[in-house]
Image (cartoon, rainbow, N blue to C red; front, side, top):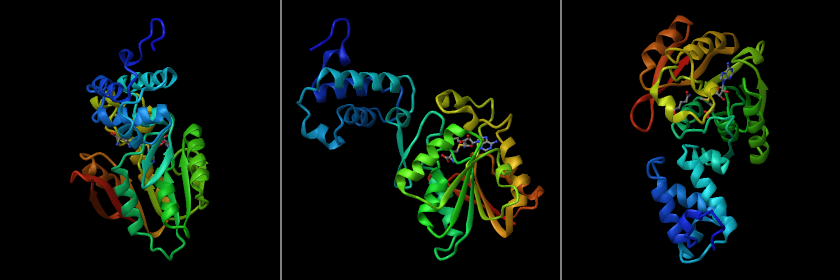
Amino acid sequence: MVRDGWTPLNGFLRIDSALSIAAVTLQSGSESPRLDAELLLARALDVPRSYLFAHSDEEMDVAAAERFQNAIDQRAGGVPLAYITGEKEFWSMVLTVSPATLVPRPDTEILVDRALMKIPKDKAMRVLDLGTGSGAIGLAIARERPLCEVVATDVSEDALAIARLNSRELGIPNIEFIQGSWADPVAGQIFDIIVSNPPYVASGDSALATLQHEPRVALVSGDDGLDDIRVIAAETKNVIVNGGYLLLEHGAMQSGEIAKILSANGWANIMLANDLGGLPRVTISSR
Ligand code: SAM
Ligand code: GLN
């Protein structure tokens, strides 16, 4: 069944053929075209992904085909899968995301992992997550360390609305969200651990072409990508306990410059943690 002037995936309504055509359509726009097509079709049909394999010869109705076509068109246009589905898994939590939030990256789990190493399970520490976006880092720490009090900030009210929604939906009570620039909204407070995945892409970086659907304020930080890290290194001095830790995510080539910025601001014991590809992506320092 094909409506006038409109051909869902060239008129193929069978699950297996629709998937094959969609996967070809996505080949240039996605690193995982087949998987993306499966996830988007499962969503259009409102079924688990496994359903697609057990019912591959079934025909979908035109409304589902239309939903699927629409999703495939968006994905082919470079929209991140997470913005189309509205969710992204991070630290085994399914987080709601929106175009106001960065899509949480698997690499950022390294930062969470390193922060947790500094927080004994039986200690009620105060933790600050600067630039929380969807809430990913702060929520993961709050969930793993229920005795801790996490404060998460962002300059974007729209991002914070999503982060608050995530804390409610996941039932994570020990986190509070405050709007404002870096350490401004927590002036006068004191924390044991401060974590941040700030914007760190240089304004002229060619990689921005592939990141155009994500908020610029979440990605870009001046000519060398370090403007926000300079501010964070300076402002966090005033809200950290003696012996407290600052953990920052950054680009693979930035660790040298960041060490200089941190030292100049009185941060010591500077250590690096590598990402899954073996590149230095997290800098840990203490006060
Ligand atoms: N923490 C989230 C994650 O890891 O998925 C989001 C990280 S994203 C790279 C950086 C975040 O910093 C964005 O949510 C952005 O809105 C926020 N941000 C940018 N400038 C800021 C500022 N001056 N003060 C506070 N947050 C800021
Ligand atoms: N890791 C992101 C990327 O894909 C950048 C996020 C950031 O600036 N913190 O390049």
